[in-house]
Image (cartoon, rainbow, N blue to C red; front, side):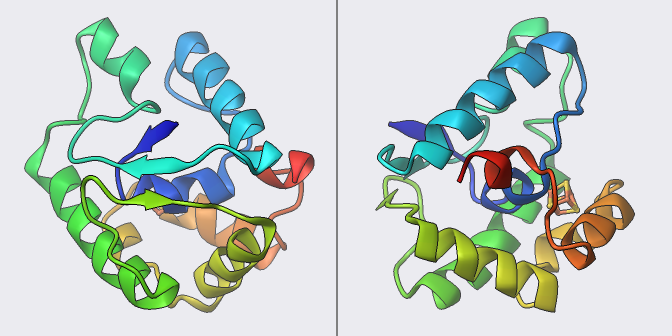
Length: 142
Ligand code: SF4
């Protein structure tokens, strides 16, 4: 089981192997390999998750900030509508290939990007989506 906060269901789509620290990257790489295998359920959590873990362990992170919690709320609302099931803490999601394709399409169309509005990576993620998610870690493996 992989534990994810709601807005990381978006970030996993555009992750290309870059990040805050070598530990963060190694951990995110491992998680995308597990997710791409398609048989790893995702449990939705509130606050820091398995992607955040190396940053929390390092002691300096933005993972508890109010702005990041708001980002989760916005993502949860739009993702619940798209997936047709509640994306709330405790929910368990199956990320099948069809679901990942649906998420990528909605991301590219801007339908699930409310969480991205104030994110410093928005421009980067816009470009990755408009480029068809080429060479993202999840798409390399799925
Ligand atoms: S813009 Fe920010 S919140 Fe949105 S997918 Fe990219 S990194 Fe995640």
